[in-house]
Image (tube, rainbow, N blue to C red; front, side, top):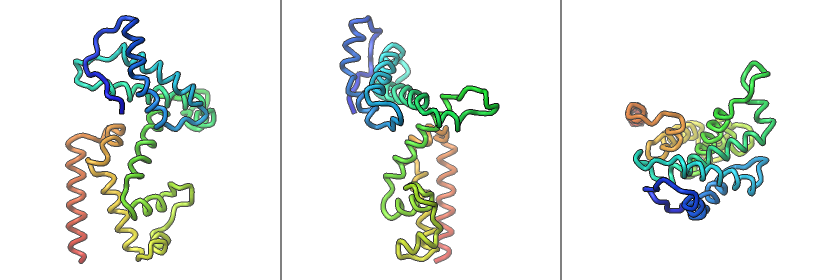
Amino acid sequence: MHKCSTTLPVWHMPDIAQALAEHERLVHWVVRCQWLGELSYAEALQVGRIALWRALRGYDPQRGTVFSTYAVAAIERAIWRAVAQAQPRAQEVLTPHPPQAAPDLDEIVEASLVWEALYRLVARLPDPLYTVIVARYGLNGDAPQTFAAIGRMLGVTRQRAHQRHVEALFWLAHPAHSNVVRRLLGRNTVADYQDYLLRLRTWLRDRRGKR
């Protein structure tokens, strides 16, 4: 990722132009990482550049956030908002009742960011845990599979397939892996991590007891 300054001053117009040029690669990086739907790459770039400009004007280094982190979040949200606006069918599905109400684009953007982060997290799963999760939830476009079917596919018992499913869920929920998803869902408090550790210890104790 492009290394950005953490102490940006109050920009005058010439400084803004220079900063936009300096951080152009950051916009390209974000656009390449996004699902663009009906939005073209060029359109996404333009949206990203506008978001970068707004981020430069609104950034406050006193808050302790690195500018690149602040800008990436702003660019991502702007692009996902544009993607949502370019997806009429998605807007129709996600439009809240009553039918005449306008779609809540913030909710669409937030849901899209969560799903993208979740898919990225699943992609990091070690094999065969990845295979179990993909098959169990139909993430490859196929129908969700039973543990018996997954067991046959992996050459293990139904019980072992189920155990790997639980292992995968605990791996995905681990604070070291799930920070981005937890932050988006508002589940990254100390209490949330303590709850995870309690459930993990209970599961490990029960598994040892069954051996």
